[in-house]
Length: 307
Length: 86
Image (cartoon, rainbow over all chains, first blue to last red; front, side, top):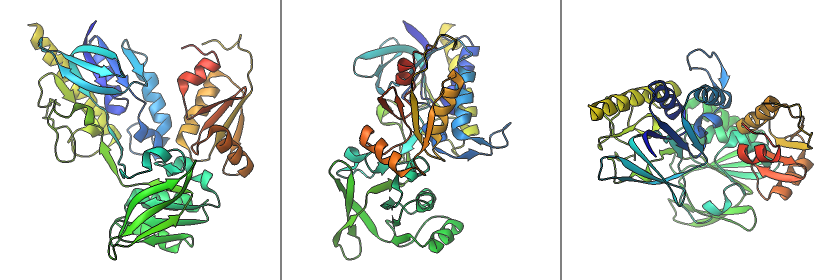
């Protein structure tokens, strides 16, 4: 089986690309590890056309049921490991350990995911005290001491959300100041249970079954210290999910896929859309529009091949 | 989707007030017509402890279906246990 198009991703760009491709009667497969994590983990969305205020998770459900009205194949819970260009001009993708799928064109719309610290203990304790979603897990740290790693808005919001439950929050900023908005900074200063530590580099997260603490280095004194906490929120921004396509298409310094005005990557036949690309402004509605463009451009590309 | 023939299993959902995947999970159970006990771990510390012990992890939602524990909104596994076919 050779598809006309395989779409990789499960966010607004991928879903809308799926709808546009199906309406053009392209033989389409959409593969995704999960449905938009970014949208699901955000709170209320108030800037998507047609919805004055809607929970991100609810909007995703509406996108998915809209997509499923159309004729295309969907494979959920599959992670693409790699992509290979074939001699006939098509592409082969490796999903999971042994599954392979072939297509004439691809749309990469894998989005962004949380940036990790890449320190010992991090992988081991994800879900066992380490969380990337304070809105989700804050209640579980009631009356506990918690560290929030980061100094930007996401870290500030995570600290404030956790402050409703935890007995003490250490906000660990890599820099000598916070980068969060003034409004958030003021709220943090007035919260009695948040303590900010500056110039902190986290070196290791420790624990047995669950997190018991972390080791950090004071960047000024170079001293290493231990902080006893039962929870660690890592809020140091997000990164494009583009590792699996490195070497096949050109990426910029941030790891975003470079695209032109027609969503074409450096590799003819591979298109990209949404937050994984170097498009300006990462917004749900921008990603959805980019997905539509990518599908229509893939359709044009296929029409030229057939001629 | 027919709900008429389903036996009613015992379902407990450990959730939190602002947890987006809890919302999605409960919306799914509602849509499929299942009754469940909704436990707010932010208010019920004992239930939070029970959930952490049973699931061996600290994320919500967790759903318990006739004694079986499922971590997160794992639609496939939940559908399988509840015999939901799409």
